[in-house]
Image 1: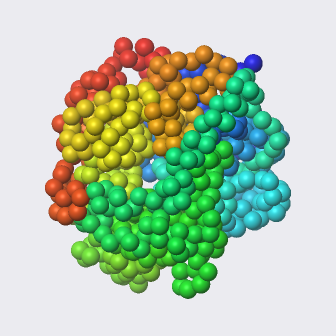
Image 2: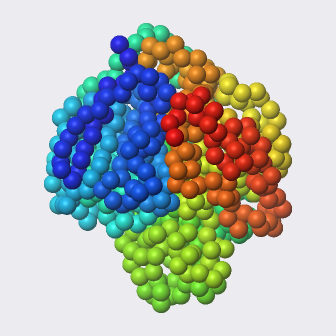
Image 3: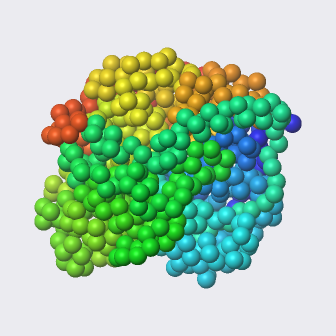
Amino acid sequence: MLGGYMGKVVRVDLTTKEISYQTFEEKILRQYLGGSGLGAKILYDETDTKTDPLGPENLLIFMAGPLVGTKVPNFGRHQVVTKSPLTGLYGEANSGGTWGANLKKAGYDGIVFKGKSEIPVYLSINNGEVEILDAAELWGKDTYEVDDILREKHGKKAVTASIGQGGENLSKVAAIMNDGYEGRTSARCGVGTVMGSKKLKAIVVQGTMKPPVVNEEELKASIKKWAPEIRNNTKDYLGNYGTTCGVSTVEAVGDLPVRNWSGGSFNIENITGQKMAETILVKPYNCAQCVIGCGRTIEVKEGKYKCVKGAGPEYETVGLLGANCCIDNLEAIALGNELCNRYGLDTIGTGNIISFTMEAYENGIITKEMLGGTEARFGNPDDMIALIKKIAFREDFGDILAEGTKRASEHLGGIAPEFAVHVRGMEFPAHDPRAADSTGLQYATSTRGACHLNSFSHDFEVGGEFGGFGYGKARKMDRFSTEGKPEFIKTNQDVMAVFDSLTCCKFIIFGLGDKTWENVVSWINMVTGWEMTGQELLEAGERIFNLKRMYMVNHGQSRKDDILPPKMRKRRGSGGASTNIADVDGMMDEYYEIRNWNEYGIPKKKLLEKLDIQW
């Protein structure tokens, strides 16, 4: 018996309404694990350069990892994989909440959608039973409304994933929201846009099944030992203050984006996790299997920025709807976050688009008339909120902004591309490469566009010390030095490819420290019955990362695209990273050599043969 897996994936053709099932050989599961690894394998095999991201031939893949649905702490996430309409390249998004665990309870490891429905539909999975149902009454409604309607119809134990008006209107920064008012999200790469193009409004999952566990008693003993360790080591910051716990530190070291990535420092005292705890916090929120509880359930009971009780803004949202737009009103940011959740928009992409708009407005490139009478002023919360709606509904110049900063800047021309902060067309998360040299390298080489989670290096470099998580040597880190960074990024990218394929929360690293890797290896073996070594698991991560790179290479990506935008070649001028500029080009040759890629950033034939990747 192979533990951890439910044993099959649902295949749904939305054109023909045919439902089928797919199984995978154990060799493939051992090589690609699940989550983004297995999703990338399916996308690599079944789509190509001719695939239109918004066409019926594109795939929309939802995939959970093998430890999801067990009791292993913090392994309750899921991945969405597709060809991105934002970049035209490989795309993936990661979400927490309880939807992934409930997909496993419903009887499946994943869902693969193909085709395009002529009318709005939604999918229901209940204890193995799969139905395509009419969604006419849901179309046009926001994700909170959809959750209310579907849980009333299918029962309170049902968990939904849906798109809002952003996805319906094919905004390129549209997200897929799950868990209703708690607003967990598969946000990046325009995955909600693909869902909207297929006229797929929602997916409802529920069930009572459990994935098999081979060594259950051994696993219970391990969880009993280590779950309290994770909780105790994270409670004073992530547990008490959520992902916004370190806003003050991040701003002090120059890592926080300010004024569309042009400013050096910002007064953040009103937008920290501590301020949230004092003012609008209702309670912490835990994803499935989570012992940390970094989610924030908030409520703004009155005033012009009134919010319903639900998901509060995360660090990325505070950074990009807040500081990057020069807004320090926490209640306004909370409302902006709620609107993005309701409309189904990525707050990272949306925050960047709005700050780009504000700089273009300040320079007279975008006008009040173009915005239908709305202004776009730095520091004005009402302008920020108005622009969110325009991006979701494609109103006025919002029709162009909804295409993302890269396309919007190209549409405007002139100096507008100087204001657009992205890699491969995907906007930056709220971490500045000028604050830590490795961040620039990971952004430039990330397979989905600018992404801080593809190597998760920033916290350790800014903190000045890397513990290795148990797979690598501990070392002191100079954040303004390139020495050792290529190897650091390469190995971390492979490790994070494993994490995204097991669909676990990366915050367990803060709970387990140098015991992280040995526990991850032990848990996957206890659950599946494998006898996988840490090296074999690390090689799986290397395989997965290189498969995604080959998808990019096949789409014309190479060294010419492994670059940062113009803003990152300018000094911030003040704050904790006032003069540093990451020498990404200077690190690239060493990075390619360590990766066993050629001078153009293309994996060499011997590496592909070693990793069993077909080209």
